[in-house]
Image 1 (cartoon, rainbow, N blue to C red):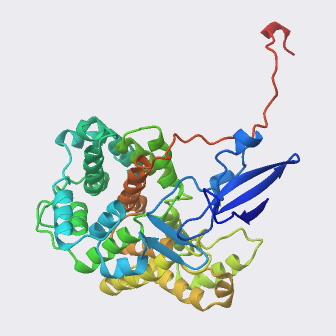
Image 2: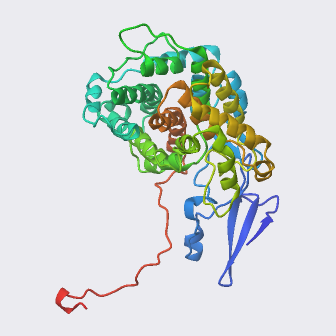
Image 3: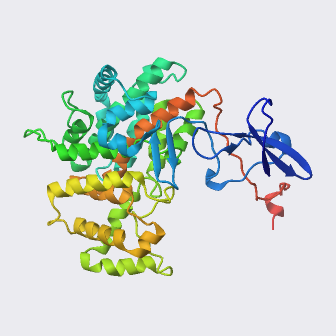
Length: 441
């Protein structure tokens, strides 16, 4: 395949790719984005050649045009609507980032106040929904409950399921962002056998979530500003991450015209997979396996041994070949939390800090660019804040909801949007004739 420039006066894209197949040359348009690699438009490939492309996992395929998030893994770049993630984490707050992802710009002071008021007034759940929780076993995984309850929202909020109505799309977007923390906190309280704590309109978004998780009716709730800021940063860092598995799931479900609550429930189900949302849980499990600081050299040696089959979880990243830009912010946040609570009574946290120190100085890890990633630091931080491992992916879902909704909204408004229909390379039997049972051998 050859790529060449078009003449300056030629209509359409600036470049074409020439594909020669069975002595027949086909021209495929090459489309350029504002950042990142160009893409070869193969949407007419089957019509012109009778062939499909083959790309397991769609890792070399752009399935949409998006203006929301940009990642450059080679250079360690993550932008939300053009803003570097570290700037947003250091200077912004989660609701402001929600506004940015949804509407494309950071809000003015008046717009921020209006948006905050709107979200705050949507945080309560329909009271009948509280009965859903008692239908689950007490030991049900929190993500199983999340999938069921979020999917059921469409049964209670009929006035925001018409995706052709921009106003209903806006209301559904606000409801999802507002109600997800309430559902997550109720899921946590149900697992503990404690009464549900209702949202408070005098608290900000993240402080309100923490009080719904950790307050009890019999005494006043005293929040910790360090913990609140830490969780707010975690929410910002996880708010969106381009066309990952769960986001692609939300877009694919939405392409059929499904209501936004069903689409987000599908995204939660995908996020539940250990290869996606369970990475920070895997990092904590690894630390528990190591057990004590004196065993770290043993596991470092195993990680360096190609024949051991052992991997240090929470190090390196599939997308970021340099340094995960979120990890630097998360590292600072993690240390702030640990400085607040201390690690003396928590051997696992002591193991984590010593493992981090060794990995950042070891030539093997530096050469392989196996830096601690966001999952390593977020898992430690959430553990230190008092959340059980089973809640880690739930918190991920709370943060990612705004990204899912922004991507869903963008897809619905995209004139090029079509129902998703991936193709396949069929390797099964060719046509066979039916044989009656008594004649089969």
